[in-house]
Image 1 (tube, rainbow over the protein chains, first blue to last red):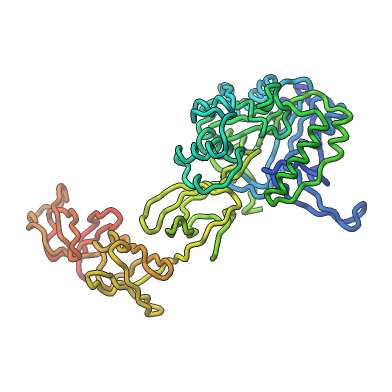
Image 2: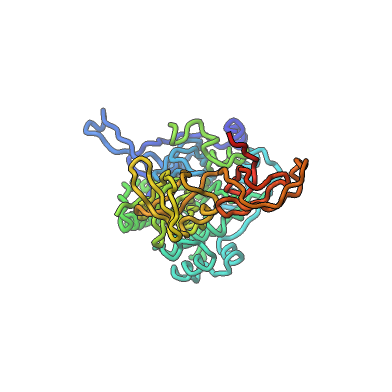
Length: 305
Length: 190
């Protein structure tokens, strides 16, 4: 599968790159916890903490700002606290960036890459908006719902335990999405969910409507395979989002993350207009081999590594 | 108060939920790439036997239930309670009809049962999967019929009624699968 992916990107003129996995800063997303590593020796004689990257995004954006053009990377990523049937704290990512592509072009290319990787040329892409899915599945306007209304909806749809949970608005959206909407997505097709709420933009730009973000996710058979952005390029807004994330982290009792000043500097210099996507390669391999547990496609998962 | 974090969830873990002791059957970690993590857990209520699903926010802690499984010997029933003894400690326990459930149909004195103890008191009793019981009453058998087709009801020494093949007679001993209530075979005395 990796050989086929590399062949595709070589043919498409996308350059393979490597960026460091252990860095002095990391993404700030409160939903992602980095695994820490420690280095002691020349340069840092007293020792320094390094973040094992939750994705190669920040490093790759620095390269894009330096003018590399289209790039891709196949690497490991690390996320603390994530282990289960579809999760392992160390996993493989395919991530690529296309300067000049909008989300539609990137989704077309992603569908092609996935069909190739899983040897399923018949898989058709379908496109649904986040708000549209909530309307058709749960009958609500996702932009006009309080946390309390979303909780009532979860209880009404028999998500047992919902009455005792204390979540913010996005937390309730995540619960409804993962419990009631997502399991039905991508039955025999590649289901793109687009236009996530702006509050879940992560590193995507906010659409002109102000309510949605230029972000999509790809699902097959209820499993999330990829996440893509029309990338935010404004350094100031990026700095504000890092700051806001760290405030949320503090409020949730999580340690703040050292902000990537080098990326902010590179963005000030100029990040080209581009779209990028990260794909979970282990889950692609599961799909290709018809496996239901990520443990089955890894040499040695957490329990045995 | 002992608690378990969702990170400690695994099959067989005993939790106290809404005041009832429960055991985890299945634990699934659910997390959107860019969102809140949950543990979706399938749970059996040990008092009612009912299975339900419950969602926890990952990282949350849940009160532990002091539940242990113990092999105990059934001694006797006084009509209201069924009395058991731990053959190692000689400690005695009494189970009520709710805790006994279906086990009353199958066990007789001296049998060893798996008993679930919550805070030291029996809340569920599992009879052995197979028991050998004597038939106290059944219609006279048809001579020569060994095919087992059809069958007839037979009352056992514990009062339970099972369907047995036509050739089985009163006074004979049979092996029964207590999970299904089905006749398995005839048992000859040694």
